[in-house]
Length: 382
Image (cartoon, rainbow, N blue to C red; front, side):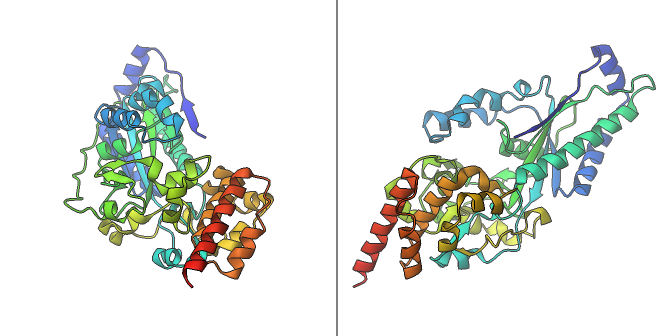
């Protein structure tokens, strides 16, 4: 899930000698230029200090707001200590890559109870691969530059680095904030004047790069994201209870979705964008990287059609997609809930009944709930 490159340093004296010839201010300018050449919207530099965000993380964990994401608690110490992931980490190169796709109108899809809504970030290629590959290219370019800065006999630079993109215990938004490429919005996502439709990636390095200045926050008194959340998961500004979040329920939660939350999910079958759709800053968003263009018509596909996919079809159609990692069982679970929240057409009923005897007990339970819900909804209409 992550790409790593850690080069063994020479002796401290050799490293100091090689670095003594490096203009790190000029190097940062080059890094930002190379990043733009690779398609990143912005590159910033942060110091490898996560102490400002650590108390909030620990409080979130103590309150149990991470739900069943046990890895969040297990790796909390790694998030707080970048040097535990890369020895002698001194700086973090933070990158931002926009993904907003040219897809069907979100409001239109959300209003169509027979269609499945998929979070806009997951409509195209898996972002983990795209960002890691580009950051790896950026790191190799830095390595080459440092090698050229060394003395003739020092043909190997003492550069050590690791590349990440939501693939290890990294406080991504905190480093984006410190590096000046974003601020933390009240929905806890990284936010800019061009909105929040972007991915983040990092390069941990042992280079003493001069850090950028954090950007000011521009949320003001706005609370649209809090008010728009279907399940009230944004319990306070800058605080999210994952146990209520539709993204958590449809992606991270391995078992049954709580019955009381199922009606609130609507037709969202993978993730949720409501807190971003209402954000005024996203009015200024521009089309994202071509890698994240819509595949397989996932921006507006009938639920019944998606529910009919076999496991083989699911894996084949979603090859290279972030959706594939939840597996076919959770995919069916999520769609069953959405079908239960639909208008209950004949097509919906036929789709649900075809899965009544599914091999998965988890799927059968959600299908049973959906059928009962549709029946009750139909009865209430007469």
